[in-house]
Length: 312
Ligand SMILES: Nc1nc2c(ncn2[C@@H]2O[C@H](COP(=O)(O)OP(=O)(O)OP(=O)(O)O)[C@@H](O)[C@H]2O)c(=O)[nH]1
Image (tube, rainbow, N blue to C red):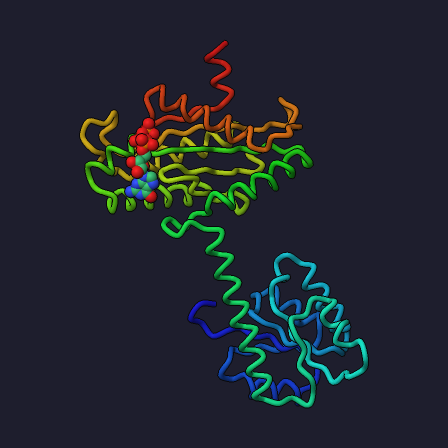
């Protein structure tokens, strides 16, 4: 919602309240309204609002239940919800906060107080979202950062074991990048890293795929539900798309265009037991495969299983 007017959803069956809130918030955001819970859920599904103002008493479902449902859904749990209420009895405030509401606004409505409270929660929500984005992404490439990769690796390896699905981890590294930097300079080096990052984003297309900058000129991919055949196909496409970038390399390099070396490991529930106490083993094995790609001449893909075959 950066630089855009906030999207505020009012859920209330009282027309007078909707009109009053609309007037109070006209400079704060773009207003949508629903008069019952069913209509509200349809509107939320259409596009997630930045903030919800919710009546305690709705014709179909109680406001507290609506709030609980939204807070139990990972897609909507972070939307701030402010209750509109004329309830003044003891314990009511606690109930509102118990179901995860951000705040409540008492009736009769005071327009300036409503606008100030809503603005405060929008600013707070915007700041938290920005901090979360900064904490999880690499600012230079917009890829996820290593911390996010590490967190997701634990989650996805647990899921793969539980659901008996394959999981592929890929590590890749730009070839002879020191020579590129030494020849063209660090600014050009950064541009080269950004272009490789874009190729990764294009190749890892599934919503569950995760592309990360793992270190300086090193990247990682986490590909849930991807077996060896799928991994090979995707990585061959990646190698080709990086070759197609046609970035001239420094003199005295093995390849005259910028290339990458790739190593990967598939945890396959059919061929091996996935019980391992070391979540990082899969990364270490993908890394070993990467170094085999380097040793074999770079600009190539090596699976960890290929190493075992080479050694046998
Ligand atoms: N421009 C730029 N360079 C970086 C960045 N991060 C790491 N590097 C450079 O990447 C280079 C990596 O060099 P090495 O680890 O020696 O490996 P290499 O030259 O790529 O050789 P191989 O990995 O064996 O193919 C170093 O010169 C780092 O300074 C970055 O963010 N920007």
